[in-house]
Amino acid sequence: MYLALKEIRHEKLRYGLIISMIVLIAYLIFILTGLSFGLAGENTQAIESWNVKSIVLNKDSNVSLSQSLITDDQAKKASLSAKQAVIGSTPVVAKDKGQKKISSTFIGAKKDQFILKNLKISSGRRARDSQEVVADEKFKDEGYRLGDKIRLNSSDQQYQIVGFTKNAKLNISPIIYGSTGTWKSLRGMTNAKVTGSAIVSKTAKYDAKDTHLKTYAISYFISKLPGYSAQNTTFGFMIGFLMIISLIIIAVFLYILTMQALPIYAVLRAQGIPARTLAATITSQSLILMVSGLVIGAALTAATASIIPIGVPMSFDIPVLTWISIGLLIMGFIGSAIPAQKIATVDPVKVIGG
Amino acid sequence: MSVIELKKINKYFGKGVSKVHVLHDIDFSADRGELILVVGPSGSGKSTFLTIAGGLQTPTSGEVSVEGKQIAQLSTSQRDKLRLNQIGFVLQSYSLVPYLKVKEQFDFVNKVKRQGNLNKAELADLLKQLGIENLTNQYPGELSGGQTQRVAIARALFANPDIVLADEPTAALDSERVAEVGKLFKELAETRNKAVVVVTHDVRLMDFADKTYRIMDGKMTETNTEKMAK
Image (cartoon, rainbow over all chains, first blue to last red; front, side, top):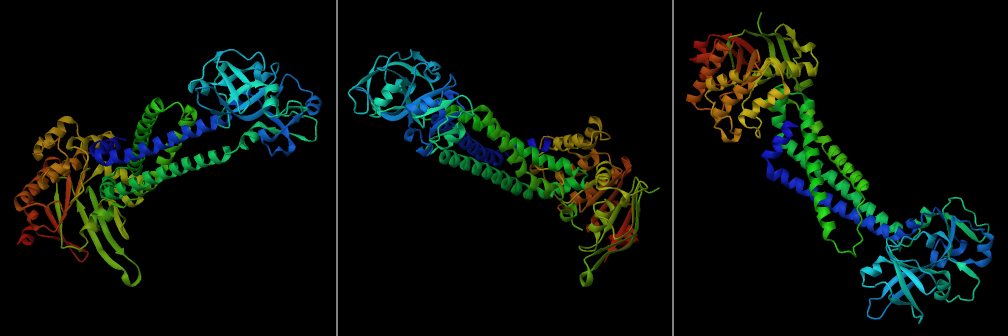
């Protein structure tokens, strides 16, 4: 550690450049992770707030909420308990005079079932009748206020926003919670014998007792949300490649620096300095560089997070970022292995001669 | 008993037709208080002799013993320990860590070898004897060739070894400095009771040596110092 710190202090420019590379990589990884989690969260926030373990959809819907329909008969046969709730889902465009149009998802649910009963209201109150809705806070951010009357799609019917709720997004679009009657009307099925799009259940092994319906684990349903898996895989690959790049950078830089300093290490070996002391020098140097890079990278990320516009979906999960930091430290450790091995096996005779 | 002794040392490099007999039946010994010179032209086997004496490589045959202990019987870590505790190396170049100030070169030795080094007063005395007491805050890159060599000698002596092995310590020095270094080695051997073995092709050092060996084509002979100088 002594030699490691002394060399870094003495060669400020050289090590400063390496640290700046690690800072940039760490910063990029943290921001990408934040974006990845932010976007993933906007896909699943609503589902997570329902706290459900399975979902029942029409077998032919290709695991798509918007393509699924549950009939009244199927709902009756399903013998719903307090742990199940019916939801009707449809994409809508919400608008009000003088306000921006917002592409949203309308979720119709029954007042006496847990979706609406347990809905956490951040301001205002729950809807009392089918002319009232509760909207995601994105509406508030866009200038909508409690009491505003919105129209959905081309319908002339107006719905009053009586409450806002946090973290209510499904597949990135903000949710408007209302009644199943409104959902039927929006789908143009006012007189049809349908109950909703799906049944969500707080139990994992719920059976709807109908051959045309199928129960899916909620994790599987989430993975089938349009674009969700592709997006997460893309981010995963980007983060993974950046980790590998950080490994290569630290390994290459340390290798070059070690090769340049090999005669010094050879002389130190000749003077009897144990190989493990010298190998530990390069390993601690690598860890010092990585820790410095990570700390500065994290500070930059925190600064970015504080000034980033509200609309950018960014979410920082401290345990995940901690694991990524540990991963980068391990990369630094692996990156120092080759130079450390070079030092440990250096032959002083080759430098001294003879 | 000699502090370092080499008996019937042979060293071969290569195999088959490219096999070279570098050292032939070398017998050598050094006692405390002696300055011994090993002179010879380039390629004569001087450095091979030095590295075998210092336990950095093993001879093909023969025995090397330091304070009666046979080096061949020691493990790698025991040899490291031997070099750290009993042998001080002074090399032609790279003897000092470039990013450590002069005083930090000694701090580093203290961190690796916690006991048996010179104490503060002894170090101050040594630095004064070497005339480098005002250079402790300098980096090696800020020193002249002569100053660097004197710091390297101080670094080797700081661990308080019984033997000092020096490889071409005057290669980069002018005649005046050569005389200074020769005098210094002589003084150090006598006043600090060390066995100082200097491997060199610089005959200007011979005026200071107690014994001189000559290596030619791998064969070592003890020679009369005055005769050699002429």
